[in-house]
Each structure stands twice: as structure tokens, then as C-alpha cells.
Length: 177
Image (cartoon, rainbow, N blue to C red; front, side, top):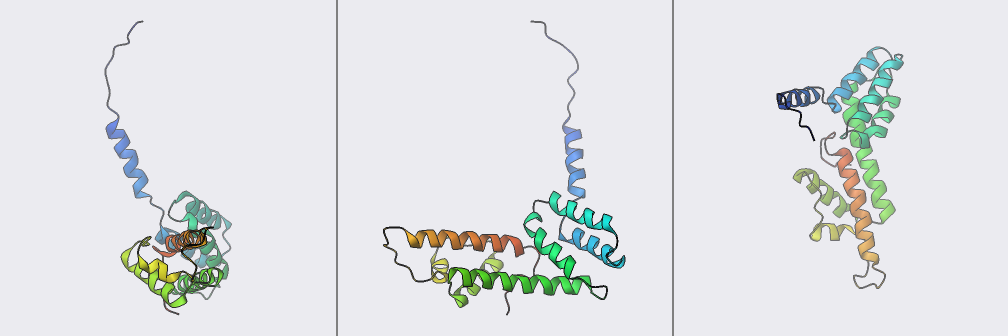
């Protein structure tokens, strides 16, 4: 077999440059709120901005789980709305509403759930072990042959993790009813 000889060229600098370019156009909630402000200034008539907002949300891993929330917020806006003030109150209201829905659906201890979620927001992560999660759960036998408590714990944990990930980086990280 014949070997091809030639100059070896390093592409590391090119790759680093491309990665830096990608980082510069980071799509985050501030970028989306800027687009919403622009959309608001045009009285929600510019369909291109709507499409741009949806594409930006879809292109961001950190915003995909917030898409429905953002789109509902846009739909709730009026020409008199103040984007920043209404965003904060809208997110906090939705946060309480969704947490209360989880508490209701799963029959959780409301006070303990609020403590658990507040601690999670303060810590920056959901504590998956320890007694705090156990206090949240409804009373179920630990020794049930069907493993009801384990299943319930896992279901509740999944819902709380989803809730936490949705609201962690876009809200004031406090629960107040």
C-alpha cells in the first residue's frame, strides 16, 4: 500500500475558534426576553420575531423544557404589559400553580414539599436521599410486597426534578404563596 506523505496541518485553532463563536451566541432566557420585548414594541404583529423566538428556544438545551411556559407568557401579554415585571410575576405564579398541582396529584405533604423545594432552590440541586424527601411523601407502608412506596418515591422525585429544572434558572428561586 502506498503511503501519502504531506504536511500535517493542525486544525485545533480552527476548532477552538468555532467553539468560541458558538459560545458567543448563547441562547438564554435574557436573549429570549429581549426578543419578546422587541415583539412587544411591534405590538405582537411581527410573525418573524415569533418564529425567531421559537427557533431560539428549540436550539437551546436549557430552554426546551420551558418552551410551553414562554409561549404561554407571550400569549398572555397585552400592549400595556411590562415584559420584565410581568415575566417575573408570571413565572412565580406558574411555579406555585405547578407545584400545587404536583402536591395535589401525588397527595404530598404541602408544608414539607414547600420546605423541600425551597431547600433545593437554595442548594441548587434536588436532594435525592435523606429524610427530607421521605417527609414529603404520603404515608405508605415501607414493607409492602408490591413496592408501592418505592414507586411513589420515584414518581414524586421525577416530577420534582422536572419542576426544579424548569424553574431553577428563570425564577427568583423562592416559593411564596
